Image (cartoon, rainbow, N blue to C red; front, side, top):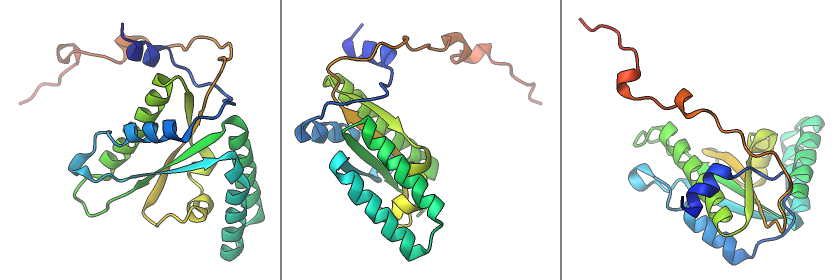
Length: 197
C-alpha cells in the first residue's frame, strides 16, 4: 500500500498542534489546493493565512464591524472566544473562502464541492509533508461578523478554517473507526429497481 493511501486510511485529526510550519511549506500546501477539480476553471477559492499573532488583530476588526453594525455584544463575545480558542490549538489558520459565481454557468453545489476538494488536498498535502492539520467550521465559519472583518465580498462563503502545524509527537489516540465498506458501496445490480412501464 502506498504511503498516501495509508495516510488517508489512518489519519485522525489531532486536537492541538503546537509546532509552526515554514511559510514555504504553507505555500506548497496551498498550491496543492489549486489543483482541485474545478468545473469551467472558475478558480473560486481564496485562502487567507493567519498566525497566532493575528488573533488580536482579527478580534479588533470584529469589534469594529460590530460597532458599525450595532451588533449584539453577546455575538461579539462568542466570536472573540471562538477565535481565542482556535488560535490556542494551532499556530497557523488558513481561512478557506469560496467566492460563489452566481452567473448560472456552474451550479453552486459544484462550486462548494470544489472548495471542499481544495481543502482536502491541503490536508493531505500537509500530512504528506510530515505536518498536521484539521478542518474547523462552527460559529466562526458561519459568522457574518468574521466575514465582514476579513473584508470579504457579499458572495463569499467561509468553507472552513484549516488549522495547520507540526507535531513532534502525536498524541496517543484511539485509531479511527472506519465504517463498513458494505454499508456505503454498492454495485448497480444490488440496488432495488422499481418496474418501469
